[in-house]
Length: 490
Image (tube, rainbow, N blue to C red; front, side):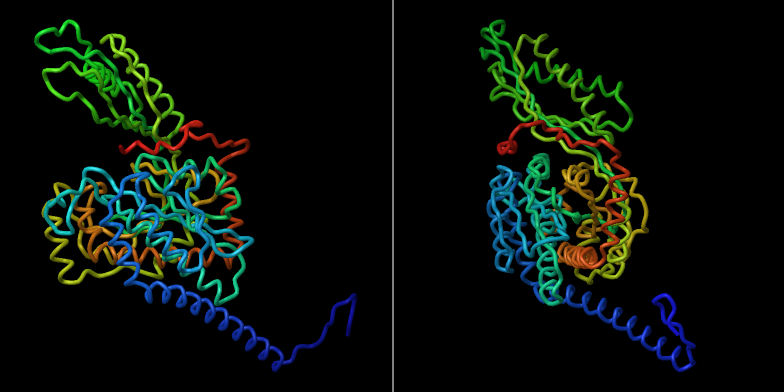
């Protein structure tokens, strides 16, 4: 019988049985497709594992600091071009920045990749302190692994899209100078993420985790004092020491520490202090960082540091100039995306150290002064929830305020290793680092694929994102309108 366009009929036991069989078949096909997709993505990374390991090792050896990553950037571009991506190099007025794209239309899913090293931490891939002769920098934050894992994930996703006729665009953003140079900020400021639906990233570390959390906003810059050179013994009265200006500034800033909020962090080094003790220095320079969970507090403390510099110059009869070299937002976490990342990290799982790796790790841990977690923790995944221990800063923060962003970390270092240490460089140059890198690549690939096939996740992420940003939000870079500080490591 048909009533108002609807068909009504009595369902027999056979009808109901056939419907159940059909439903079960559909569910079975869906599960099989999902498993097949997962297998395709993982296989792509496993098949090319040796190539990716060799690529990461090359970038580890290059150890190029911010905005000087010519070889590292070129190698990653070559890797992605060879996989069928189109590459736009030198974006954002940064010679070592690039964007690699494949596909067209929506959704647009982006994966971030870093590749800059840190100065002053040269180290061989051995478990005792052993700088490499002639090398001044090292990958103490594991960015050689970061860039390669992200590229591997992008390539795996591209191959999966081709095999399954998935619509959309997969992009790899080659982002230089994360360590103090704020490379991603220039990309954000230039509108390069305006059409992106979701961003993925990761970071090398000592644990496996997809917890969601924020970071510290920061502002960085160099204060340059100019004085008058003179003979320090024969005519000291005629000199005006630029180093006195730096030291007076440092003294005032150190007194300032008592009068800032508890979570404020201020770091500095004297990068130039003169050439000889018997010559009154005509030039001296200090390099400063200010960090805080709230970027408005960063701005406020920075203004007070500028006043300290000006007062120091006045008191020492020198002249001071300062240059903003970097500035980044705090990370805006996105729980909707983090749940997906966490689930995929658990699918991939951790790894077990081989006897040789355990011996290496035990020797590394013997150099620690702090906590020594169990070596078995490389095979564990941290519980899902808010990460309240992050005390670092990253230019991913700026990206996260213009598009929903999610990240994870994997154990590329010996458990208990501190970032920016020779121990991190050592582990990142051998098999422990490579194992963590492969974990990250697979997790990123699975998560990106899910973003392409599950539009509800992206919708939920944007709803959360807009709620957290609030109405009327307008992005303004902490670096102002300055051009990239391409010489900040020189």
